[in-house]
Length: 212
Ligand code: 2DT
Image 1 (cartoon, protein in one colour):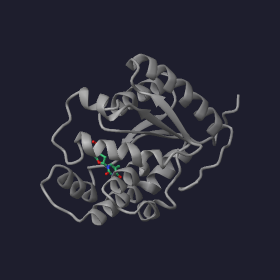
Image 2 (tube, rainbow, N blue to C red):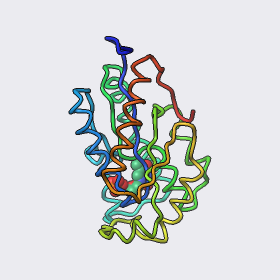
Image 3 (cartoon, helix red, strand yellow):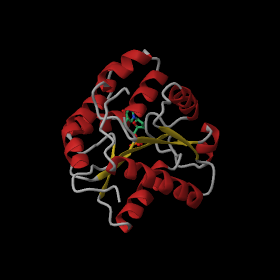
């Protein structure tokens, strides 16, 4: 009970440092929801498929240089260009599992030294997640997992700063997940949280907007 014909999907965001397990868990969540027969899609930011996304991608792989403010606004623009589709999907009942969102935008840019409030401003008016799953792992432990690629931000010293910046972003929608545990334990916990969240949305919780 609770679900009705015009119930909306949930906006579920996964955040955390590089190598925290976000991408693995996002994929598993999608499989879980599909298994329940619940309409769901996996999204990620940056979305490298758009022309803005391609500029970001070449910056991240050190093939181009951009001013820090400029790249920050490109990351934000990359979310804005997906905003109306995001709203359409949610309103049609599809749950979106999103690997990184505005919190990455603010955490990474402010870790470079940009002003925190300035970083938040271009995100105002984007859809607010119904839940943020923060996969919490010490930067040293993430680094030990190896396989930092060669991308611009994948360095321990910088990840330490990003972890600090994330601390300033917690709000009521955040669940802090201990991501040092076995993959299956984390998976189970996320399934419970997301199931509850979907129920709340089906019962009529309205969409809200950043930064609420
Ligand atoms: P992936 O390795 O997850 O593709 O991320 N980033 C991401 C930002 O600096 N700002 C943002 O708004 C977003 C969404 C985090 C690529 C890198 O881009 C960073 C890691």
